[in-house]
Image (cartoon, rainbow, N blue to C red; front, side, top):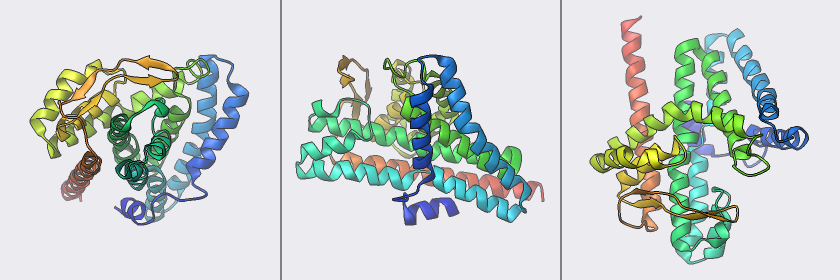
Length: 306
């Protein structure tokens, strides 16, 4: 609760965010180590991820419980990205509503890997909504899932280590996980590990979207469409999210100069500008249900094992 409150009040740090420093280190290491081999990617990922995870976990392990949970909460604050998700969505939605397509294209290019310069207003809107739904899973629900899972298994040290490990791997996947000549082999390790870490959280997110949206449509879209998507985690999240909102996502798009046919997700209605607000509200309702569920389970556990 403390981490979510700090994220809501302060948002993402403008300067000095630890993930920004981590990203610069990753860029420099990749420039030196990328020889187009999977082994190099594995070694680089382990060199970047393992030390901070061990350091944070060791610090939390030797502190008194109250301070250790404080360290864990700080790590979760840096990892969870609800405020950043809203900020980036608004940065695209505002110029789009104002009719400034060029600015909307520039801002959505920060969120997606498709060729934003080729997008019309409808394409920008689809790209933004897909990003909102997928990043709600990756940057919010997955961070909370691994924080809780690590805490259940190993207390505050486990919570801190698990949430940092997930966020660092997810960051490397965002930087290296492209199917391009440069990253196809080097980024394979980060992409596969990120898929594994996000697998349970993606299904949890899809289920929560179905619970707080149009449940029947979300479950039907998840069941029928998710397996057609190339990503094993984005498919369930975006199919369930689009179904819950009653909108159509997916479809063909340009990636790295090549046209890519993608399946249709969701219903038949093309999204409009209001659907960006609805998607953010859907994610917030799902987050509220998750937080209440965790608090209830914690209370039940406390009552069962005093």
